[in-house]
Structure formats: C-alpha cells, structure tokens
Length: 134
Image (cartoon, rainbow, N blue to C red; front, side, top):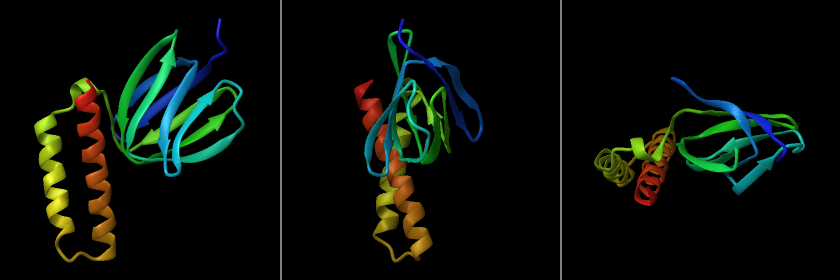
C-alpha cells in the first residue's frame, strides 16, 4: 500500500475535498510542483490552473484559481478562491469571461485594475483548457 497523507482542498465558498491522498500535482508561480507523503514542510503560492490528485490509485482533476498551500509531511491544505471539477465548467461562459478580460486589457487601466484583469484572464484560460481536455 502506498504511503498517504491527508489532503484538504478548500475554496472560499465550499470544502471541495478532504481525504487520504497519495500524490498531488499543482501549478505554482514557478511551474508545476508535486507533493507526496513525507514531503518537507513548505508554504507555496498556487497559480490558476489544473490540479491533479491521486487517491486509492485513481487520479482526479480540478480547476483552481489563485491561492496557497500549506505542506507538512502528513498533510496538505490547499486554499483557493475557486475550485471546480472540469465537467462542471460552462465553456461558453468561460470564453465570454476571457473575451471580457482581453477587451479590458486593451483599455488604459490602473495598476490594480491591470492585475485583477490579468488574474481574471488566467482563470478563464485555465477553465477553457481544462474543459477542452474533459
């Protein structure tokens, strides 16, 4: 039997997943990272994109927005603004959000508005990409 750790995935509005996990792969600001049982403690930023986690030998996927993780040898807590399953994504809505964000980027924005719009664009692109794989 593979070594496991406790994985908790939380969004602002819901508890997405809680259970024993063998491995989790997630997007961070400096590339994709993976965690297995016994990992060194760390805090890491979470980027918008797809996470994958393996429980009982079966891989599961979810789309996350920005957030962070707390990693300890026997647990991982993932906190994100939003978390959703690829099959729950409304592709037309995601494409509309992408178009709105691209249009806003063409306008003169304050620095704060620019970064909020870039974050919205990244979320929309992650959702579209994941829905296309599903």
